[in-house]
Length: 179
Ligand code: 5GP
Ligand code: MG
Ligand code: MG
Image (cartoon, rainbow, N blue to C red; front, side, top):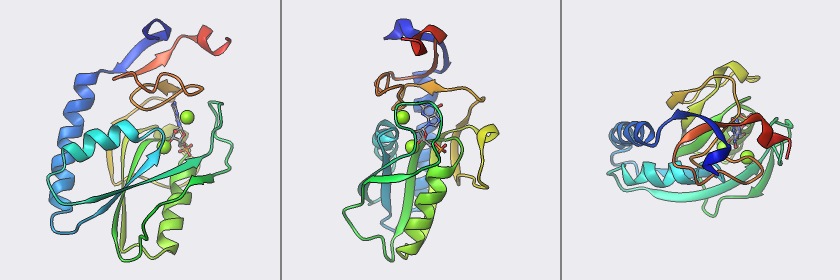
């Protein structure tokens, strides 16, 4: 698996350091608000786990799965709910945890949905951002790292469901795509 990686963009140590900072900042913001922290599956599952371990306030968790990519590396522009939330968001302070914002289509769709369900507030934390690729006008409230316009894998992010378990973020060798 490691042999398929051409270059490590952000190391495990850098990622963990950043998540500690984000956790401390969000703990201040959400003190006494009992936020509903929503993990956007599957990509954000590792970030969510590491982030909430660094949040020192009472909070609740829920999970949602949306799909816009299939097995390809390009957004289809179609966002489908694969798994909906278990709890109502009405009146809740919602913190959406995202792995990466690329076109922004997935997230803008999700925010609209949560607003239509009368969330009290919605806030987005993303570990990675590729602003050069945006097709909708949307920014995260909190961003870990800004990345160049490249397809990355690791730390929750997949290519054809593989590489999610790498503890760092990297770029695949070109020959991996032609398998
Ligand atoms: P968007 O809707 O913003 O275009 O894309 C959102 C989703 O596409 C992300 O949550 C992630 O699952 C996937 N995605 C976007 N860019 C990348 C990337 O560079 N690598 C991987 N593995 N997935 C990506
Ligand atoms: Mg995502
Ligand atoms: Mg994917």
